[in-house]
Image 1 (tube, rainbow, N blue to C red):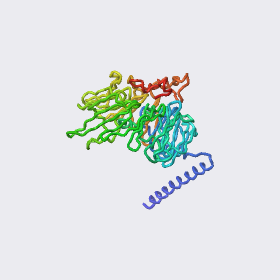
Image 2 (image 1 turned 90 degrees about the horizontal axis):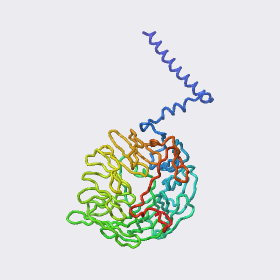
Image 3 (image 1 turned 135 degrees about the horizontal axis):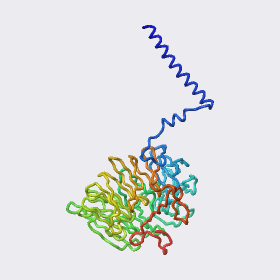
Image 4 (image 1 turned 180 degrees about the vertical axis):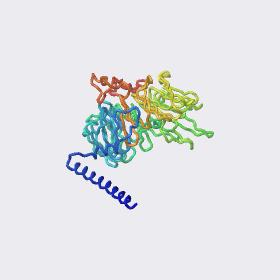
Length: 487
């Protein structure tokens, strides 16, 4: 017994000694540069599990959970809590990183810029999305608004003396300036709220998934209880209006809307009046449509109406959901009983059928059904210029579809969120992991053109049509030669 025990103890010491000797040898080899297994070993330990099936083009782990992600031409701009970074769309490799408390993207696929700033500090910088180089710097602005075709900033000498300026995203001189008696108060940073519409929420789809929107023809600035309506083509302040006691004002589709909610007999009674911004004259009126601006306590309106671009979402007296044109008040879509609207823009409406088994896409111009797709009772959806998204559960799926035809662009088995959509693919994310998914058919063909044969930056796929922005029923959102600029 004693002999056996001694052998066992001796063997144990020999094993430990051998392991220690091996570790010393590895350390010496690594220190002398002969062989270093540690980076490879750490890469194996830190390796990320794929966040989607089928596999993605690339997947990268970033420093923190992103606050926003935007596809900007050939780059992916990732905003985090205290910094912003850009990555190559094709490979996911980091291009640059900057400290910033807030960031936003302005411009389109060919002229995108990144705007960055610091909290409680005036000014901002306009950066090139590929290099991170500063293209323009401002040291005094208190607020910035970013759009696909315009950048606005506000400078205030004091609380009641401000100047609003409009810039081309990559421009060096203002297109116009306008006096404003304030823009609320304090340092506001990027995209402080204006009086327009609020989007429908969708689980697992980021609210800013579509990227910057084209600037509307009119913007409504709330200042000291009044609304200043600004023409974005010229900078003229067309209206300076104070809402009535029962009113909420909103600026949608080239009209100023007066939304009235009156309490009577224990119910809220609604009326909507569309006004010409130049004259203030009423151009249309509808009663009985609830735009969901009021809560149940006294019909006080605390929210903007739901909608997107030039359309509004409401509920008819019989409980059916409806989509209205903000310009002329027409009913563009009325849902069937039990049907629920999931997403809308000025082209299409995505709705879930009453039996909660199908998502239906209808064209707003004429009401034609473009496509149907099976989906679960808790599916969410969103519309972007390049793709319609459907996020389903049990099993978790994320699907990108051609908005017009319903053709599948990407079908993923994933619990990740849709963060950004571009012409040829989308960014998905889960925690600190982000990944790029290329749309089907977007490989091996010439890159998209549409600028005199110049390819879209960063594109690697087949020709994908440019998003066609609706002009609205009266072409109020398209270029007007008399105004000399997109309105």
